[in-house]
Length: 292
Image (cartoon, rainbow, N blue to C red; front, side):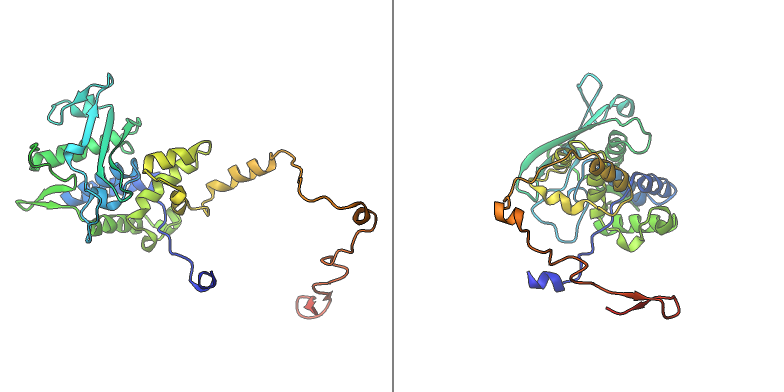
């Protein structure tokens, strides 16, 4: 415990916000193919609180299996499966389900679903439809050879979006839009975990039963998700103060003083009169001087 006091505070990656994600998407539209694909991947990952190793190529792959197009299923408004090759996939798809085959927490074949948000940019269905269409256009899906969702076609070669490229996109977009003034985020404070953190924050700010929603969406098996919550954001202030102001009265039913203690209470050793912290006298440039 003594070492904890001496260690510097952990450098947590800042959470991305919906405004940031919208700007990032627009920023990517006139860029090379990999940038547009990376932007769609970021949006798709955000709505499922994904780890980078789940949707892109990382330097040191662990046990987590990267998603393939076979792990993404679309359904229409009647909950019927819509084929990836359907020419009206963009219009028909109302729900998207992602299957996480193997994860860091050891759970296999875990599925999560999202429906259309009604937003043309910040929508999980729109993002994943775009991802699947782009991947299938360069590498047609086959049952025997599923294709990673991070695949894209560039210079007559099939490539895969890497985590370093995701990081580059996040930081370049942040810098381009003046991140410190616009989002309160510096480019250097962003990382691939900012996506997962942003998802947790988006739900946490809703209040209510957000804890259960965060754990369910992000597939957390414990309160480890609290590491992704950023208590310094301004949006906490109004909600927290309102709750604290409305807190009902409560009674401490701990140890009660004896009759003798109530009749002859001990002096308060922490009172200002007995232990004055400091005295102020009208001296010095500002008229006050410390004498304690």
